[in-house]
Length: 179
Image (cartoon, rainbow, N blue to C red):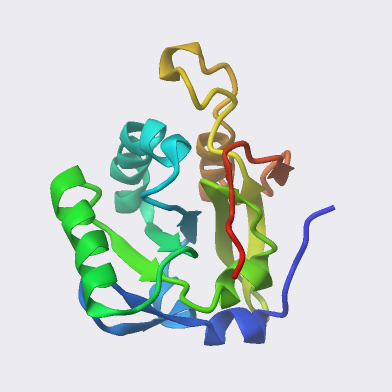
């Protein structure tokens, strides 16, 4: 079953963007056909394994109206922590917002347990709705051995105005550290 939060609550979620230092609001960030939140941590080796795939997906889908942002539930909003994340974006070529979920509000609202774990939001009649959540694909260790591209399939289905099937795939990765 696909877990959901009220659209009003989703639109009101805010977080600090480590890249710009600005407070970002999910409702205003997610204009377009869809928005991909990638729960991420610099301390998780699985996140590093997916780096190239995340960049490729962003390159493929951003020009088709799908937005992307990383969100880190394991750091605070201090300037040194923001600097580390900003440097990562600059050095990795990820080129997207890197949101800080300092109090883990986003992590709790979406029920995130793994890193990386994906939430895809699309506009609905009453605001944002979760249309896909879970894994990027079925093989974190080896991109060449991937046989199921879950996120890519979901995004293509959204662009064709179809509901993603499956709408949820169990994510594999590091456990989110809760505070």
